[in-house]
Length: 440
Image (cartoon, rainbow, N blue to C red; front, side, top):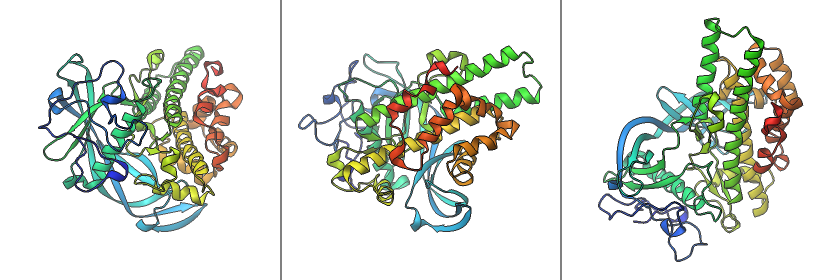
């Protein structure tokens, strides 16, 4: 069965092969385009892509997590110090944000410039995550992580559309002549159940995320201070700081390498956050073996010029609406805006990694940090630094960004520049002086 995406969506489209279909063999060491897409026109858009496995090729293990996707129906927010009321019809400038809610990771929606309070949300649908492994063939025993989208009855057409978009984004990126990027999660295949659920199978390259690392690191600080276990030896304290700083820099560098790869092949991520970066370890002493990988490409946008000239598609309408508001009208300007929009999200991720792991638990979170940067200081990082210096709880984060004579603040300011035209590209971020071990 063939996958259907882009303008091929319809309420009756079957996205993944049903359980009754004949199994398709797993790809060899380097998957070729014929394993993924129709060979009739390899340069055309990925409207259709064939999967490489059937349900019989897998064994499913335990449930390990969930993603909740929410609709914001009403909320009050603030912008530039004033209070505003918004209705669901005003949601023009959308941004995805991960928020913890019990054992479920909630995908909430925010604008570029507002953090919303008193938000009323309705659950759209929930994706489940399972452990598993390949059960047949030469790759038997290979660990996998399943991401399960609900069927249309539970999740509506949006769930099917997101599953197809995520699969086609991975298929396109894994078809590169340069080979597989090690900083992108590898999609192995998928299938559709009789109930309409879409199961995507990713190679099990890590159970942790950048959010997990930050949570563990902050809780470790809190625990040590509550038990008065902080080392009295200044040398040990400095070594511990350097280990964490090196881990964070390598984590962010890997994430930006994956993003640079996506941009080089005309794909935007559009959902970059702490939960979107998979880690194979969260042990700071194992930083030498750390390999960050980007995941969650369900909102990915194709920015090839042939697509840009055709007008907005399913997952890009809000992006191009914001591009027009920023004065980007031509295909080239819109492409530049889309890339800069990803860089802004990456800048918020960088800020999160610079603060949360270096503070006690509960002192700083993604929403509070975004509010501090955007609403309180309006992206003025010099003023932000002065504020943080006055709070002893934030001094370690300031110390981290001060490395290299303030190179961290310099990079963060560039990525969060209010003018999208002045933000660096992903490759420039990877090669920035703060991203080298020299700052340590």
